[in-house]
Length: 583
Image 1 (cartoon, rainbow, N blue to C red):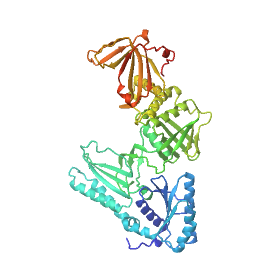
Image 2: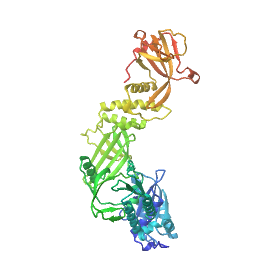
Image 3: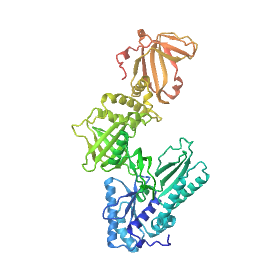
Image 4: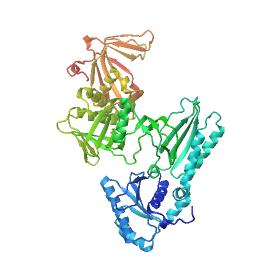
């Protein structure tokens, strides 16, 4: 790399690319935005912790600005503002980045034309900034303007050659060679870092693949004896694939109906797939940054979904209820585009597809009620409440957060997601959980609904009524109480029991205050295996109702909790006329 880079003699595209890579290396989460026609340059977008954005506009200008170049800069600044206004985003900083330090006249022009008219901060990052980046990251300039690209190619070839050793059992020398190549590659490649690992044929779980941020490429090479080498490329910054894409040429094919659908959706809409058979054709296999001839090879390939730095949140509306849907994926293919999303609980999943030519849009909504187990209570209730409302309606509309309609069903189309008979039990169940959650002092999640029994569900419904200040009235047969003394108990008698109100949700016991239970007991038993308990029995002749009500207890009376108070028979006849089954 020369001591001073002659930026004025470097082509505009190369200069802008080099400087943009420097900016991305300094801001690894920056994403590249396709520039608008006419203004040139490269836009880079960085999201801040406060959900606002910084914009870097990279220009190639290396000599004193002409009037036309100033116009281009001004156009870029205006289009950035328009872009943010249309998306309802907030910009914190706008940076003009170019290999040119401003003259006093430039500073005055920049201040009067741009800074004074901006609601956000505007900065000029000139030659001094760029040269500091060049000094800190010499591999970037070397890669594009010297022999850095060829050095990367040769080292990748060396790495692949070492990985294809016929015998990996004596791995000490091989490991040293692989790690040396990977370390050197990571140093000279401005876009990617490389990692390698060896897998013994006895390690049955060694092939377990784990996707992670910035992993761009992973290849496993296995020899005839079952020993393997894994080579991975990790992007040094999020926009690396935009500046240096990893390419491979191969033929995908599908034999099963399931694989055919995966391939069909990938071609039409760009949707990712977990695994498909692939055939690499002789003399047509292109590995990262190089081409190498190889015989026909069969393997399997997976295409993982990309992380969208600016996910789109949509809102599904049915009559007077709505639910937000967070983006899961957004892709495009030869025919059109696809957006998928789900609500926070995962119970409602949608797939929106639009054909590019006809603009025909289809909406597919799939309920995943099994996803409610383990989810947060309030999002789960919101999802079920939406589905319950929709079960009584035929209307659905999909909108952006700002009210722009994306999809609305024709009035003749029934867009009922689930029928009322299916969703009603779920609605009643989640309503009880929500009432309990609203009163609880500790947080809890939805239990495993598949393991619930009818008794648990019934008790949650009773607690729901108790929390609303209502009495729970039910018939009873037997009830266990603690034996507090050896003093004989004369029955029949009226019984009052003060106890803590506990809701059992999964493995959690949620305290919700205190209740009083009133009942008449006809007679009792003392269990042979536990003399510390009484088993009380009811009898219809003295009214076999149990009355439970939530009560407030003063701190000084809390020692009475779990005590049993025995007295004259209670007149419970007034409750009989008010008794109704809890649904």
